[in-house]
Length: 188
Image 1 (cartoon, rainbow, N blue to C red):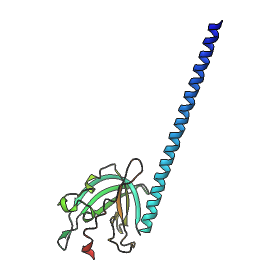
Image 2 (cartoon, helix red, strand yellow; image 1 turned 120 degrees about the vertical axis):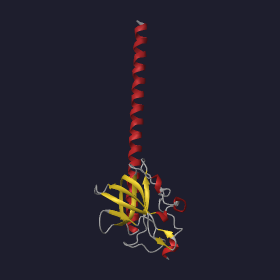
Image 3 (cartoon, rainbow, N blue to C red; image 1 turned 135 degrees about the vertical axis):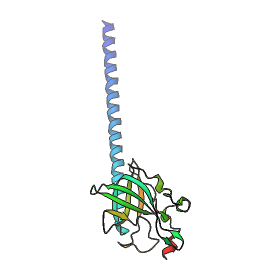
Image 4 (cartoon, one colour; image 1 turned 180 degrees about the vertical axis):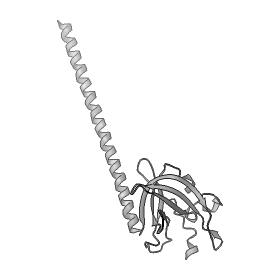
């Protein structure tokens, strides 16, 4: 009789331990869900802040997925400096349309070494990457340009203080890929 009693208490202990394990697993799962929700909330808040920052910089704000590019486009010369561009095509989150994105190569840090190629870091943009853009929408056609700094001038809708940033899978964003101001003296 005592043996049966011991077995019964052992099975109760096992059952209680199992319940504790299940409760602990549920608590851990809830903590993960709460953490995920917080991270998503922070990501959305960061994107909302970026939209406000772009509005303050007199720009138009787009986010989306790169569907093609980058490609190099030659440009005219200004004081011995070629004003070439890099183009990508981006499907915008805002309206689902595909935008031509024209990035001025002189604002990319790798411009001096690129020659007739897409400069770094623009050459790291790939199909499937997500970008955050602030710039000026094309007045004709579907596209955006002026996605670079305005060299310290007061931002206007014709000359916003723009940027190109990569959005990582965790919702964080890179530094501005178009932040080099070395050639600002060309327009001053």
